[in-house]
Image 1: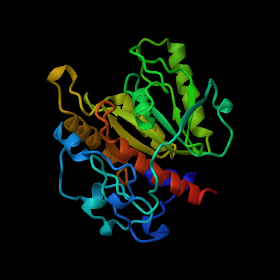
Image 2 (image 1 turned 90 degrees about the horizontal axis):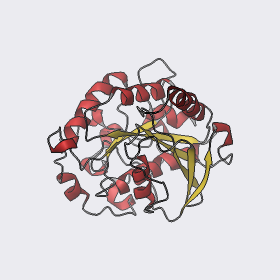
Image 3 (image 1 turned 30 degrees about the vertical axis):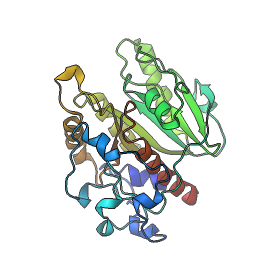
Image 4 (image 1 turned 180 degrees about the horizontal axis):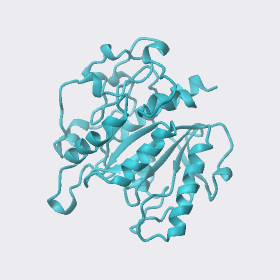
Length: 298
């Protein structure tokens, strides 16, 4: 649905003007703790475990959703460990049921119903399957492997019998054949360009290592094609080799590299599949994207 995609992928290539948040205001701004049915457990303590920065509120750096005027944003409306403001479209974020539906080798073979879906994509070994398992709280619904590049199909998981999480093949697997890498490119791009039910892409970025050019390239391609995305920083509990940069430092560096490409800041959030950091907050963000999509579907 192009309206929401334009709001979440404000990259600076020429495109039609964006709809302002104020133009779709539908009610008063709810507070985060009144809206969040998942009741995050000690999110602040989890965030403190890797010294996430807690700067003063800088409204220009926030992702402000429809229904919220930027000047009315307060600190309590921003999801912990993110730049995401909670707006009036946020709702029940709980996952009660999750079922594997099918694997598709071609985009045209994906489910053809009208349920909204979120695509999960990222570099091989970024933790896609682990994040999906953590979101639905089922250990093996998305199979994990120590061998990067294991996911080779488009996998649909039906959530609460009303929307999908879609696990896409990882990119950048160095040991894949050239033909396999070329197949991934056409295969995945075909999915993005032909799914009218796509609400947004969750682009996973490994926060335990410095920014990778391949992640920046993927973000730029999505932006140029007007596909809404949220940066989901994974492995925020880790530092590679015990002596690398802290996740918060890597995230800041990544943001510095991409900010010149965007008219408005894209949404981002810190997560860890090990500690549960960011799980409930990410689901709440997804709920407001989904509810806006449902209410404005053309």
